Image 1 (cartoon, rainbow, N blue to C red):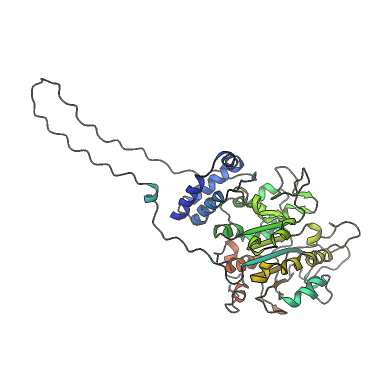
Image 2 (spheres, one colour):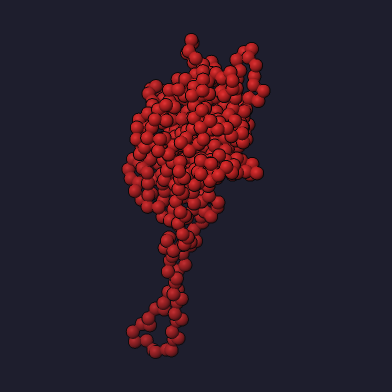
Length: 436
């Protein structure tokens, strides 16, 4: 912790001019909460201190944040102790009188410097990734397991072209039919609640406080790179592509153009909003192709979210064009070949095709017997082509497995005793799936 705080102080000293003003203006209260929490002995203080120092050192100008937190009370300051004053000398010519010498004032202890006040502790070793160092996760909307991987599939590219190359997680299921409960669990380990199960129509009431870290925070702290690629994300006023778009207070949660904030879980965490990480690394999908050109420019973790139409939500596509599962399959057939051909994937990559919500069945159609069972697919040079894994995985498993691939600690629900992981086989450590 000592080294983390010193790095945070050093980074803060570099703030000048506009950058300092942006930090203060964006969310002074929420940032103060991070600082206050980082300076206490409460659990998780090390990651919070590192989070602050890393964000400041990265020169990331924060975006305007969602409603801020109440400030944490600061430590009380002790009044300084004054030393007793020496006796005044007698006037010249006065009768000599024996006056006992005053007792020597106790020598004040030297004021400890900040470095001395901090407990000396060895630096924690930097987490290291295993043999997989680039993870690509595509999150779609499910029309049911059979529609994706069954004999009568509606997604021929996924089922016939990709499936033979990868490991089918046939037991993968969602936590809820809505989008947010699954995506928030997959990147932050957060449990579903009444608001997220309704996809939070009041966006501002669903933003998690600064102390709630995400997988993206963990990657940043460990000096890995991440990016979230959102199809159709644009400034609602200008219509131009923009980073980290979310509604302002009182505005509707959906902005049109196929992008909806519920598809963007990174916009629901103050830890990413207030220190500029969302503004820097939550970008339009159009950035992905450029980043894929070189392994050095490809993030270690890429979260890819199609818009409402291409994710597979019925009723969101232009008239006369494929929709639902067919639209999601067309999106995969466009983008997956680019990912698989990239230098980063070929070197040490893993592609996860997952589902993060349930598409309601069309009028008159029969609903799947178990709509939460969606399946998922792992494609990598390190998986057995055509394999099937029937273990009961869920969105917490996505988070846990990703954390283990990069040597990180488990956040929130990812550490649950019953949460299974598919990381060991990918790391070459056998077939143990974790959990009870």
